[in-house]
Image (cartoon, rainbow over all chains, first blue to last red):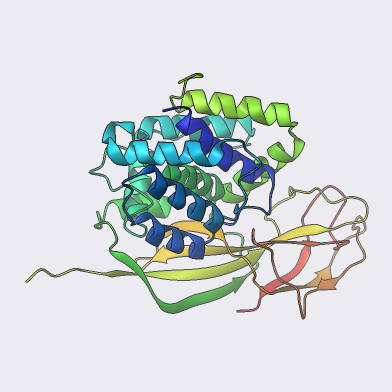
Length: 232
Length: 113
């Protein structure tokens, strides 16, 4: 299989490079979770999954990255067939830490494999088909892209996630009950450390100032961190 | 019989400009600042589990006060047709901020719901 992880990273970083093109909203996650419940038996299944997942995340046109679609599909098929091809928590943590360093986040949050396991376990209680529960050894490639995006957007693992992890809820056991929308205004203290805004700001600023070559270089290092070697 | 326990989640919608002096894009001498709408997910125990952009939310804002270094002539925004984009973002062109290069402002921001 050629460059499956690298292809994935292109998706994640490209959407950051073009703010406004990505919208992994809560509704997108709900739809993506339902989509991810379907089985992948063939390359055709995987290709259809990747196309729909990209559209749900605001990138319906993947023509900006040659071979992107086919590589992502191959990576998903690979992971579906062999659990050993799932992305390890340690590599996801390393990738997040690299992002923190590269974006020059003022107060970087260093994550470990244990943090990633905790995070995806809690998130699996809400979106069990995107995020792997704790009894699974790693994450699906598209799930890793979503996770890195979410961790970046949230500024790491929120304290609430750590507390929720102690409750050890089963996958898919958390449901939003109809219409519980609460409006608040001008309350930027939801996260006491404001790390979410710090991370968002740093990421947007970073990609806005990058040249295409610089972005490509960053992607290469991120890919290496996730275990993808050139020419694999 | 197997019993499945279903826990509940609460969705919260928050709108804010920034919490400090930094934002992107950086306001110029003409002012301006970004507004974002965010969805927060809390469980029934009050644990904040996740946040994500809240696209397409109606937003508005009103200037309250500033100081001698303030820049930007737009003191209110919103109303019909003002929504955050697919990334949950909206930029208030010329919005009044306390100084060029900073996003701090004295005002109120609202989301429609």
